[in-house]
Length: 472
Ligand code: HEC
Ligand code: HEC
Image 1 (cartoon, helix red, strand yellow):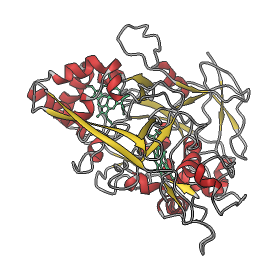
Image 2 (cartoon, protein in one colour):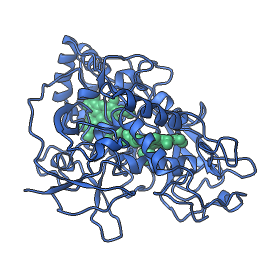
Image 3 (tube, helix red, strand yellow):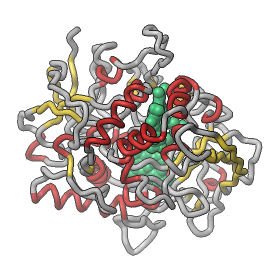
């Protein structure tokens, strides 16, 4: 099937991915920019090695230390590095409430969850549990409740926050053949001012390879989906198609634990708006429906972040480097076990992407040049599809247009770096798991058979599998 793809240089580094296999459409521009149509030869299959240390293709850096999630990808020009640093400052430094002496970074709130991106995505890694600081949010299904789609638990001076995050804890033990019994921790989160409302707790994920995920072709994600389980393997990944309700065709979601956001630009504009209370052309000043907002002294109708600065933050996130994997002989054995247990049915090791030769959207000079497109392989270990993960991981209610028990396969690149320090290791959508083994033992639903086989591994097999996972 042939299809037309539209490319969006100024939205972000990415071409606007049209649902190539489903639809042939023209897509309206998200912000003020000119799309260039790009022909849609499908990615040429390049010979994909089973294991590679080049996790992020040309974005890979050898650093696996503390700073490794905060580095630029290695191919930026000196000028682009400067622009990247501008984006970085708007993502990492604290925003303040208006009016303030700094007009560039004011506009926080009136309601918000944290005052910077890295307040939640700590050093671009995962967030913290609420007792340690920001990083976990509560999404709400019933957007018409006075809380909107998300609880904002902070507010600028003079405004009441909507409520506070509270929780009850529980835990059980489970035995595994090759090791000590493992404790499985669980928390039920609620809002103190409305304990009856069902919530969906979400931990801030690590921001690894976002620009690369943004460039995976829709068709390649759809190719792995099998909603009716036609191949009978018990695994039925589903795409999260986002309806637009304005006559334009649905778009494929890929970001967030529910794959609810369709592209990086959109995801980041939403983060500014919902997590920090900062308006942009995608989310102009809100109509006041939230409780705290109604009592706010601030009634600004100006956009709090310009398209240019929003683009700079998108470029910053999109052009973060991916740390190299550290595979050796034992990881090869571990990888074979990973495949045998069926983990790779959802944690798809590799995608071939076609990356524009210049990933910098705000680079005016490049915008009108013919971009060369190079095919390369990346190793995110996720199909980016939604799976039924069983009752143990399910929320009480659906949210983000997905059933309560469905979650996007978590990408595993950088897992070793994210779990290096056992004190702040937090895995799964609500951060309940404190170790890789615990995260795997929470798997259920479509992953039940895989989990059971995992719990029957011999000690040496268990060691090899964990060695492989930690080398990612
Ligand atoms: C209050 C905490 C918080 C703040 C502040 C925050 N985020 Fe997030 N971020 C999250 C959570 C939680 C998710 C997952 C949301 C979901 O699953 O619905 C997320 C998801 C994302 C994702 C998608 C990740 C993926 O794996 O799909 C990106 C990209 C992102 N945030 C970037 C940003 C940027 C850039 C900023 C600053 C403008 C920001 N975030 C501010 C908590 C936060
Ligand atoms: C049916 C699909 C499926 C299978 C099979 C599967 N997983 Fe997962 N995996 C997921 C999903 C979905 C999540 C996110 C679940 C959540 O957060 O609630 C996840 C999360 C994880 C995490 C936590 C990552 C993080 O960043 O929080 C690890 C580790 C993991 N899986 C490893 C494995 C291993 C090892 C196997 C094989 C024994 C496996 N998975 C099999 C779908 C699957």
